[in-house]
Image (cartoon, rainbow, N blue to C red):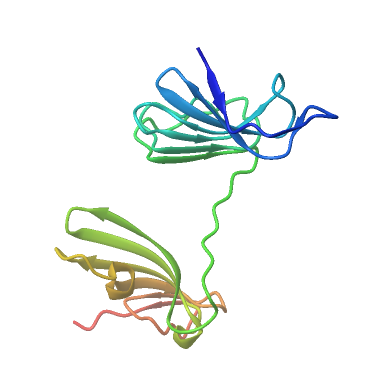
Length: 173
């Protein structure tokens, strides 16, 4: 059966003032708000380590499944590690507005690494699509060499990180 612990309720209203945990089967659920009979599940950890936020059924191969709204028709990549599910799902990476490294995503396959990188103000706030081949653990995002950039004026550079025209290509040989 379910075993609740850490529930702290207001005796006058039977509402919870704090989150509480419930072990169920081989998993663990964290609840909050409401009362003991109408608890709201905030976090689920399945016995195999999958984590669900806002859902008690994270996708089969997913490590983290965050669900906010109800999506009626969904086709989730069965190999996805992270799934964000909402009627208007968004992911934002925020960095300090200084230096050359702002926010980015590195896509890796062995020693081959592609990077989508919003470079900081000292790099003219370029959006860079770069590549690096590396077999070491390092700052791969910063080491990636831009193959294509978009500047804040909308100029696209291929082979150059300083496009002078709307579409500027450069190949030295």
